[in-house]
Amino acid sequence: MRLAEFSRKTNETDISISLNLDGNGKADISTGFGFIDHLLNNFALHGLFDLHLRAQGDYHIDPHHTVEDVAIVLGSAFDRALGDRRGIVRMADFFTPMDESLAHVVVDLSGRPYAVIQVEWKTPAIAQIPTSLLTHFLESFAFTARCNLHARLVAGRDDHHQAEALFKALGRALEKATRLDPRRADLIPSTKGVLG
Image 1 (cartoon, rainbow, N blue to C red):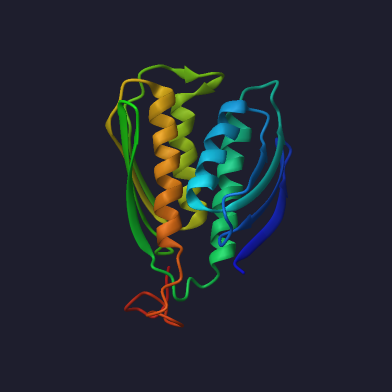
Image 2 (cartoon, rainbow, N blue to C red):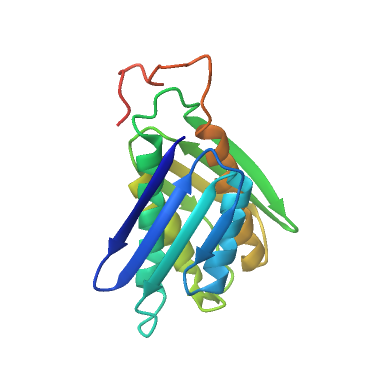
């Protein structure tokens, strides 16, 4: 079982998470922001990750610290659950349509963090979440998960649809990339012999 469970508490947020990479998409998520919960529920369901996440933050200021720290904790959980990444597929991509929107996400669980997010948001916010913060969420996740993440919107008009397509595609791409490949067995998927 590839599991991670930990908590992170700062002066701005208090977050606890448990993650099972080999789950079946069971999610129990409460961040204080319904739209973020919605996106992460989709992410877990489509990635087949069992995800339990509780977050409390300085909501009286704005959503930034909480949403950013949720991304940091989620990425850290993936990094921990993957261990030395031995035997994983490592690289994968997925296209996801959501009505008029089409998202494409490519991941490489290389141990080297990098993010390229190509999204043109149409509005400044969805619910109370600034759309720019969704881009930042993906960047923060990539850096703490220590993965190379490319996410782009191929088409779209509605920001809710665009965001949902992105998170579904991220879940699907990560589900493929985190799979254990029996042909790789106990091998590190790198010519260097290590990832990172």
